[in-house]
Image (cartoon, rainbow, N blue to C red; front, side, top):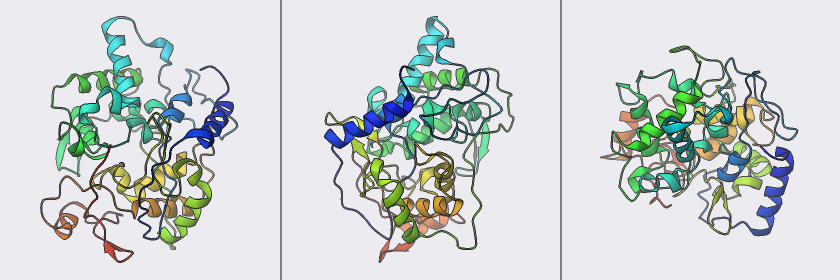
Length: 342
């Protein structure tokens, strides 16, 4: 990667100040506004941290290094030639920019790399090298044994709000989109132990204090730590030509209520380990929980599983979860959803 990542990040932010268009959407301030997760399209691309074979993560412009993992994916220079290598490259392109390379099935402004940083490579950001060796596995979410294809299908359905896409749903089973993404994941996991619980896999869960989590406290942290990238309205930022730089965290262009990031505990783990993007692991555990509460206490597109009332769906799919779905926030029951937008 040419240039110093810290310098590149500074240049990008200066460019944003000069020309980025921030989406202006009504702020559903229940008591909230987080500066969560996702690096955002361009930034993640430029910060594609290559964990070398030595196992030592590359520092991002003075920011604390990611916690070393017990496994390092191969560098991009190791992509093999021929059809397999081409499939790997296509899979990475879809992962980094599904809105371009799988546009028919994407109904919002999100990308896979927004929640799985550094193109699915970074430890404690649910890296794909750890996910690949964990499937097939049973998932309580749908009470079934899931293959990796099932898992990707769900990511399109929830995280990229495929019901609002041109096709009206995720890619059909057997699509080349799955083949290419799986080829990329398998390659990232080259040499990884099958079915092992790998250090750095998934998102860590920070301890929850007796103070619990509170979107009101989170709103203040969000304003101080997150608005420079995600805006005070939480809608992220785009370049003048429409390219996503920082992803939206709630509202019509974000992930829907069925996505994992709508769970406060999962979002808190992502935030604690990875945000702010240029200063990861600088928030306290309490701050991470509160920011996650702020982000997740905003309305977003409807849960595709909902067929009856919000209360019925909350009982069927959200029981026991740390979620604001079906909860009264700011005088309104959350979960009715907002119309999705690209």
